[in-house]
Structures are given as structure tokens and as C-alpha cells.
Amino acid sequence: MNFRQLALNNVKGNWRNYKAFLISSCLSIVVFFMYASFIYHPDVVNGNISMRTMITKGLESMNYIVVIFSALFILYANSTFLRARKKEFGLLTLIGGTKAQLGRMIILEQMMLGCIAIVVGIGLGMLCSKLFFQALGVLLKIDKTLPLVWNGKAVLITAGVYFILFLVLALFSVWTVGRLQIIDLLREARKQKVEPFAFTWLCVVGVLCIIVAYVLCFQVTLMNFLMYFLPIVGLTVGGTYLLFTQGSTVVLKALQRRKKSFYTYPNMFVLSNLIYKMKDNARFLFVISIITAVVSSAVGTLYVFFQDMSYKTVAGTPHAISYIEKGVNTHNVISEEKTQELIKKHGFEEARKVTYVKLPAKQKIVMFNGEHEMPLGIITEKEYNAEARKQKKEEVHNAPGSATMVLLDMMNDFVKIDRTKPFEFTLNGQKQSIKLNDPISQSVFNDEGYLIVNDQDFVKYAESVSDEEKTKYYGYYIEDWKETEDLVLDLKKEIAQEQQENFHNSILTYKAIKEQGAITMFIGFFVAVLFFFFACSMTYFKWFNDKEQDRIQFKSLKRIGMTDKEIRKIALRQMGAIFFIPILIGAIHSGFALHTLGKMLYLDLWKSGAIVIGAYIVASAIYFAIAQRGYLKHVKS
Image (cartoon, rainbow, N blue to C red; front, side, top):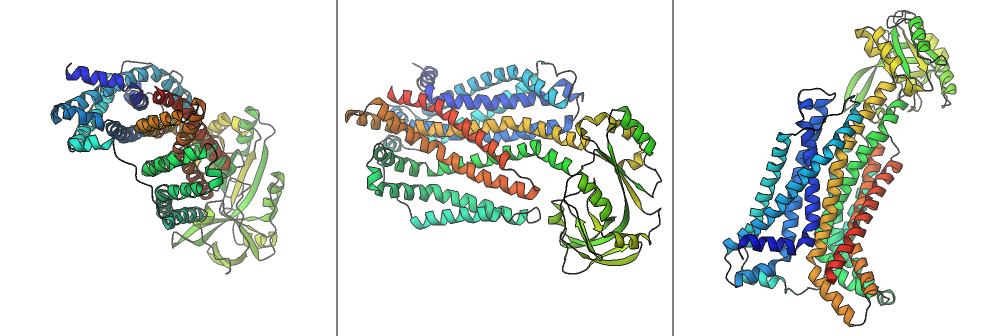
């Protein structure tokens, strides 16, 4: 038997161990190849599709992330496989095998697995590329889907990148094993378990770190995000590390001391072994919990921009179309007759027209720790309240000499106004002051950053501004605003280029955010799925690393009279704890991260967050249900 045959037999003999590794590796290659197929597709290279630059840059960035995490995953998997086979390597060395021969065998084995993963991954990638192109075609609204062509560049780049990756990591594995002596290799399998020990005070510190991080999450705003980001991340990561390295042992030992529950089947068998497993795998479980938190938070963020941000943007434009003209009745943007004609032409006869006159003023505000001069519109509360009643929103009532400022959501964080002093502004070159009431964060017009004043005050201010300097707002409330795209495009054709900035609409803004969000979500989805498989497969490898110990334990339990069903119950609880505890802790971290994002963007993300985190946990449960069957079958054999 030569080394090639020995390596091939080792791969066949350890096929169950390598199965999850191959599936995850193939999946990463499939994702990389599909992205590369799009980037280097002739139609994309020649610029025949819309948003080409944005999508290709996004896919290239994702491919870098895929390769980096693939390298970390393969490195971890290789170290797990080698650790489980140290006794085997020691015996081979003992019977005369040299380190060079051992290294050659390791390289052959790992390159066999790598080549299988590359061939299968590229093959599956070719099959999936058509569906990938069709899905992107739907999102980009391409009339003709990208044809499936032989993309030699994508094949060569994918095969080359992953071949080099597998080769470099195989050489690293050889270097790792080559540093060990025969006695180290043989002794690894016979190491005695040391009684786990932990400091209770470190466990308390870990819990306090996480609690403080969670409390700080409720203090974050868009303005202080950078100040709080590192402390929150640092406290969360540090607290989670202490929770697994110290807290798991402290909690399990506390459960052991509760004699009544400890001696209840199957708790004694589960806890006695689990305390060693949790201590041995503490750092690994910490990493899995952080990966879970990052993946869930990233997917949740993408889902928010896809699902919630578009509606948030539309909420700031309650009128389907609007425009602002300088001067009362100048019609220098578009004539009312033309607007009405186009509205009727597109079947929106029931569109409700809204107008108001605004006085142009200037204000000095403190923003980003500096004073800035910004434009400020002044409107009468009579016109504001008339529209507020129709939209069933809260009305504003100011006493003479007082006013209410409209600051939409995030502007409250940016703009700092001292309401203890009279608010000063400049109107037609003259300084004015007025008392400010509490600001409101809703607007009934496609406008923001304006001042609502008492009708008497408005008349007084209007006397100093000529009709030519005033601005007039024209808005149209259309119930079925999602059908106004053709109307908006026709209106834009009638408006001069220099006046386009004065024209606002809901539908194009909504569509732009929705489409970009959908594409980003679609691209990110594959990477999220890949990370999910990486995280779950790493836990699967941990199971196999302990398979010999589990096999001995199960045989011992069988000798004392336990049935297969009872042993399975014990095994499932131990495996479930190792698998689900880091996922649940990561999910909790993710929930607070999404809450912080929602607080910054003034969005209620509990529903979106629950959907994303719930989907991740359900997917993990499905993976566990499938993986545990294969593992237990292997241990029993």
C-alpha cells in the first residue's frame, strides 16, 4: 500500500467526520462561484444591465468575506480533525514513519478533500447560477435574464483561490503536527480529565459586564453612537467570554449541589459529563455565540433596510407628489393646469390638493459641536392644522409669541436647541425671537425643519416679506400612491432641470430604497446562510472530537442496564446544551443590537428582529435534528 492509497483509505474511513466539512466547503465555493459568474459575465462586463457597478462591487466585497471566513473555517476544521487523530499519527511514527511521510499523507488527504469540494462546488455553482441570475433579473427588472454561459474566468478564479487556500492550510497543518514529538501524540488520547474549576467573582463580573452593555444600548443615539460603540462591544465580548469560561462551570456546579434535582434521572448523568464538556469547549462556545450575534444582527440590519426603511422614508412624504415655488402664484416650477391635466390623465381624479404659504427665514443652530446657519420656513398653524385634521394627526396650538418646531426623528439628535431661552431667527434681514414649545416629530407636508406659529404672529411676520420672497407649497394627497410612478415621470419631464430639486415624490424614493434593499438582502442572504453552516458545522466537529469519550460513556451506561432510549435522552441533552446555549446567548445579544439600531433610526424593530432571530433558531434546530442522528449512529457503530 502506497501513501496515495493510505490517504484515500483514511478519507473513506473518516467519511462521516468529513461530511459536514465537505458540505460547508462546497457551499462556500458555490456562493463564491455564483458571485464570480455574475461579476465576470460578458453582459455585465459590457455594461448591459442597470446598477452594474453597485452590484459588482457588493459581490466582490462579499467574496472577500467568504474567502476569509472559509480560511478560518477550514483552519479550525483541520485542527479538529488532526487533534482527534493524534494517537493514529503517533502509532504511524512509532512503526517507522518519518515526519516527511506523515506530512505527505496529511497533504494528500486534505488536498483530496479540497479537490472534491472544488469540483462539486463549481458543478453545483453552475447549476445554481441560472436560478441566481433569474432572481437578480427579477430584482433588477431586466427584460431578458442573463444567459447561462461558460465562464472560464469565474471557474479559474474560483478553482485557483480555493486550491491555494486548501494547499496553504494543509501545509500549516503539517507544520503543526511536525512540531509534536511521538510521546505528545500518543499521550494526547490518554490525558486525564482535570476537575473543572472557576472563580465565582469572575462569573459575577461577566454577568455585570453584559448587563452594563445592555443598559448602555438604551442610551445610544445617532449622535453618540461612536462614543458608545466600543464600550458596548468590549463589555459584551468580555462578559460573554467570562460567562462561558467561568460562568458555565459555576452554574453547573451549583446545579450539582442541588441534591434533589441532581439525583433525578437523567440530570446526574447529563451534568456530570456536561461540566467537563462546557469547560473544555468554553472558548469555542464563546466564538460561536459571537458569530451568532454578528450574523443575526447583520441579517436583521439588511432585513430592516429591506422591510422597514422604505416605509419610514414614505412616512416623511405624506403627499404622493409636491413641489415648492418661490413667489406666490409664479408657477415657475410647473403650472397648476398642467399638473391637474396629468393627474386626471393617469386616473387620479380624487387626488386632494394642498397648498400653504411659507416665509423664508434663517436660524443658527448648534450641530456637531459647532454653530451653523440653516434655512427655516415659517408657516401658520391654521394651514398646518387643516391638513393635520385630514390626516388624523395631532394638531398644534400655540399662544401668541410662541411657536412649535417640526423636527423629524433623527433631526432631534442632530439639532440642539436651548428651549430655556427665546429662539432667535432672521426674517428678511431682521432679527426676531420667539418662545419655543416642545418640538413635534411628525410632518403633514413633504417638508421638515419648519416653524409653526400662531396666526396673529404669522400675519405680523408676513408684513415684512414681499410676495416675491415668499414660497408656496403645492402637494397632492393620493391614496393609491404606489401606482403613481408613470405620473411622477411625466411630471418630471415637464419640470426644468434647474427646478427638479424643488419637486418631491413618494414612489421613486420608495422604489429606490426597496430595490437597493432587496438586492443587498439577496446578496447578503447567501453569505448569512454560509456563516450559519460554518457555525453549526464547527459545533458538529466538536461532537466528533469527543466521539471516543462518548462511545466509552455510552458503553458504560449500557453495562449498568440503561436502554438505548435512555442513553439517547442523556446524549441529546448534552449535545443540545453544547449546540444551543451559545446560539441563544448570541440571539439575545443580537436582539439588543437590533433594538439599538431601531432606537437610532426611530424604528420599532421588535417584529423584524423577532422574525430574523426566530428564523435563525428554527434553522439551527433543523440542523441539530439532522446532525445528531448521524452523530449518534456513528457513536453506536
